Each structure stands twice: as C-alpha cells, then as structure tokens.
Length: 523
Image (cartoon, rainbow, N blue to C red; front, side):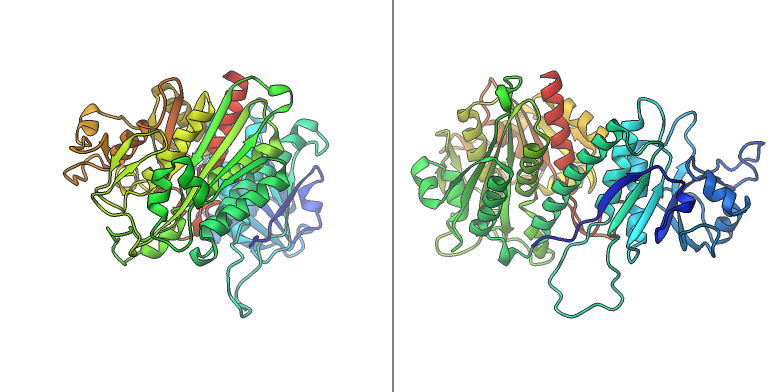
C-alpha cells in the first residue's frame, strides 16, 4: 500500500504572478514593544520573500492578518481570500515566531512551518511557497528544510475506507518553492536529496501505519526484500528454518508463539570502488505486533503495538534511500522480524535462550522481546564486520517516561552517542545521550545464565537503561555503537502538528542518513 505523494519543484517567478491555487508566506511575531522597525506592540512582521505579495495588498496585509487573529506564533496558519490582488485565490500566512536577530529562521522552524502550511491547504492542487531563505552558507540547509517539510506535511496514509469521505480534502499535489535562481545546481541538488529523504520517511510511515494483519513477518520481509532488490541492493532473507539452523535463538524464541514465522532480512549497499573503506551497520527492531506474549500487555492502547516495527521500517527505508543517494561508505541493514503472540508454543518466563553469539539469556519477561531479536541481529552485524553500528527500536516505555514523545534516548559508545545527538539536532529529530551504569548491569545478573533479559527484581528503575545494557552484550569491543530508543518519537497519536501527521512519524530516518553522510565524510 503506497500513499499518494506530493511533488515539489523550484521556481524563480514572482510569486504574486504564479498560476497556483494558494501562496504561502511567512510572518513573524514581534517582541511586544513598539519601536521604529517593528511598529506597534503585538504587530506582525512579514518574513522576507513576501515583498511582492505585500505590495499587492497596498501595505495592508499585516493589518488584515492581525484582524483575522494572526499572531505569528510558530506553525500557526491563517488563510484569506486574495480577491484578485494576486493571481492565486488564497493566501496562507504561516507563523515563524519572533524574527531572529541577524539571521534567518532555524531550519527546523522552516521545516515545521512548511509542513503546517501544506497540511492546512489540503484541497488545493498547486501551492507556491515563499518562505525566507538566507543567501549565505546556511541557504542549503534552509532550502532542504522547506522542501522536506512541504513533502512530509503533504503525507496522508492511504487507509482502508471503502466509502468516499465528502469532507476529506485531498493532500496538496504539487508544491512550488520560490528561490532566486531555479536553475542553480546547488539548489536543485538540495531538492533532489529532499525528495529522496522525504520518500524514505513516507515509506517508513506507510509501513508503520499498515494494519498488523497485513504486515506479519513473512509479508513484511517480502515487501522489504522486493523494494531492496528493485533499488539495486543485495538482499538476503532468512526464514524460520535458516534462523534455527543459524543459531538465532532470540529471533526464534520470540517468533515461535505466532503462526506467522519470523524472518531476518539483510540489505547490503556497496559503493563503487569500495568507497572510504569504512563499514556502517544499521539494525532495526521489527516486532510486527506485540501482545507481550505470555507476559501479556494490558488491553488499553494495545492497538498501537502495530508500530513496534518502526525501527525496522526506518532501517529498511533508510537503506532504500542509501541506494539512491550512493554515499561513499558501505552500509548494511539488518531487519529482524517477529510477531510476539501468546500461545501453546510461546517462549516462557524462565526459559534460557542461546543467542547467535553463544550467550545464554534467562527470560524473565516475554514482553521484553525486542532486545531478544535485536541481540541476534547485532551479533550477526558484528560477525559480518562493521566499524559503526547504529541500532534503533521502540524498545522501552522508560524512554517515554524519561524523555517524552519527541526526544529519543541514545546509549552506547560515548563519542558515537554525541554524533547521534548532533545529527538529530541538525535534522530536527532530537536525541539525548544516556548512561549505561554498572549497577544496572549488576541487577541483570542471572543465577543460571550469562545474563537475565531484564532486572532480576523486575524493577522498573532505569528501565530504558536496562535495554541498552542488555544490547551491549551483543556488540564486540572493536565496534563503535549507538542504540537509539524511539518508543515515543516513532509514533504520533495526537493531532497533526508541523510536518508530523497522526500515526508513524518516520523517526529516525533523517538522523540515520545524516550519520551515514557524516561517516562517509569524516570516518
């Protein structure tokens, strides 16, 4: 199932003269004190790029917007009929917050504004966007942010409704971004990259949003493998027989309670000429539905567990983008998939499981299943050989308790965790490094095995950290690694905001792609 996508291109025509259904401009709020430049307290300031639109309104545009309730707050969208003042019949003013001192708005501000504007203009076929773009070294980042925001704001899951929805307006089909020179090669390159990145995020969202009965492990593996082969990646798929013979005890244990057997999909990208010689491994958790198994979850909200494969979706989609972007570094994605169900064949609390790297794990809670399949996949990545390992998963409720729904938790090699944080800041997917204390590991000592799957006292203290401590057992000492817990940021259950729509968000695809570029450039 593929959702319809918004297209995007550049124009350098005066926005006031474009034959479009709507024009988007930016507006700033003032600080609240009257002065010679900002005007009366509480007045609006037009952002750069809207000069010709303001002239068409004879200087009364900000006054009119204020009368309609505009404040210039970030993400606020106010629409008004142009009544022939410009070619487009509708004008949409999107808030950018206070005007930055001596600089253009931050890229994430522009990204969210573009997304909010495109969402608000659903029903319009063709939209022109004239948001402030700097003419300095930050121009590329700003243009990329606007393009990504517009493309992601236009996302809507295709869904399963069988009857027409009269009040449902179709997403914007085409966005034109106004720039000084539409033929500029650097600007065109940014738009090309934004299309690829946004496409990967949208694909991730689609996979996360698909109903779990349609995306059980064999079907998910087939979809990823088919897309990987079409993109030119090398694809390996291990079914339940190959997994059992290969010693993937964690994946087999979690998946054995379901009639839909587990899978492991490996996607490999090799740059022409071998690239830099560095090797990056990506691992993503693919629990296509998580009931908790024998340690069953409460019924309330369980339906959201269809998103427990968001890490796998992000890694698979990132690999498809890598195939298109062609970085100068080798990248391999490992996507373990299983459905965690209660049945007569389910794994049990008290079981001891032999993992791919030979370690024995005592199971204390079958709802801590993600770390079991990830341990196998991470051990396989290290056995294959890699220099950097980035793993992402909806691993713990502790991440949401500690950091909320927008900020991912990061654990692992200190230097690499800082690089993840920097990448997240750069692309608008914030992450925060967390420690892996020795006392947490001590609490996971087992009387009968090498390690217990969770704290032996079933203690919820340091819940997020327990996941990271466990996964560390499956990374070899020579590999720099980072575990990115996206339990909160991967799925948005509230109202749409910025370029996030309800459902899967696509986090952390953009972070992973930024990290791959960073490794390619800096090792």
